[in-house]
Amino acid sequence: MIQVFLLVKNKKTPLAGEKTLKKLFILFITLVLCLSTAVACSASAVITSSTAPSQTTPAPSGWTYQENPGYPYVSFEAIWGTSSSDVFAVGDNGNIIHYDGNIWNTMNTGTNINLTGVWGSSSSDVFAVGLSGTILHYDGKA
Image (cartoon, rainbow, N blue to C red):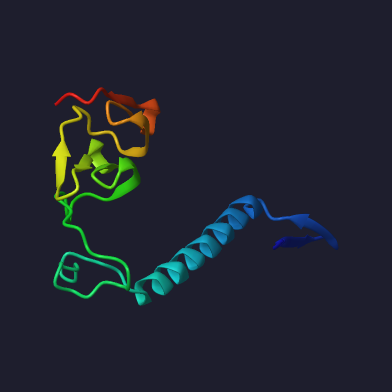
């Protein structure tokens, strides 16, 4: 803890702005940590619109790249499926995509709330949840 004192008649008296100084110091340390994290993250491989992998880019062993219909504007947060030909992914701005075993297709959700989770008991009983308490249900009908 940093303490600032003002010497008055041989007594240690806390300086009036001590709390403000402490807050500024904490803010400074937080900023330094955030910047060092950002620099470390920028050194790792990050996919951007100019370096996005294509299906011709070699993928790690056992993996293949899939075409994202919302790229580069949509990030996905969760994925769930009943089989390799029935998979749902949810993400930013209310986006849900469905994989039919061949391609990913966008689904109309009617919301722009970020979705963070998806789960179901079958392909006709799927729930997506998101920010602000959003809950969506899909009954399998288009």
